[in-house]
Image (cartoon, rainbow, N blue to C red; front, side, top):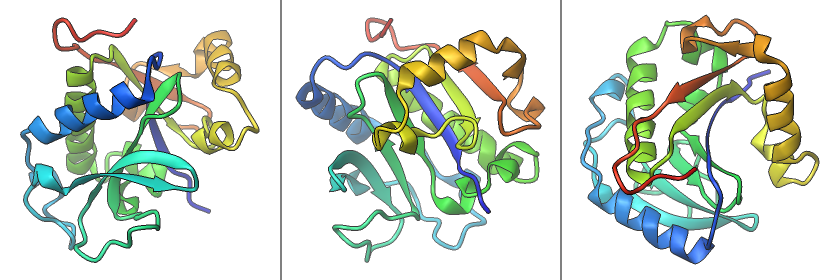
Length: 194
């Protein structure tokens, strides 16, 4: 069974409408490239116009599709997705080719892609004003359980805080699904969440 890599950024949501506008601006002005995934058959040059605000099962998110025939009403697993509507966190997802097996993400086999995704999501987080991103397998932290109402973010967060032995100093030190890594981000000035 595959287990997804989860990347979240902590924040407090003031207004979903304001968040949509803020993220639209950040993503439309983003300058980057996808050289780190040039080995992938769906690789293409970065184009900020590929970002779309979508809705699936009552969840709104921003999606960057790598396929021209991506279905409007379906969750495109070969896309980048950023879910912003939870008041406590933002969740970042890369295409399933890279995130479908959390172990491949942290064992160094795909280190060029892993570092590329870290830089890519770190750039967005910095422009947004986040101070850190938390990396964990979905077995150790499942955003789906929160979205579906089976768990709360507070429950997970308290668990992490009460088990510092599960926190690793480097992403590549993770060896168990219960472990996590917190990456510090330097937020853009005057754009910082507490």
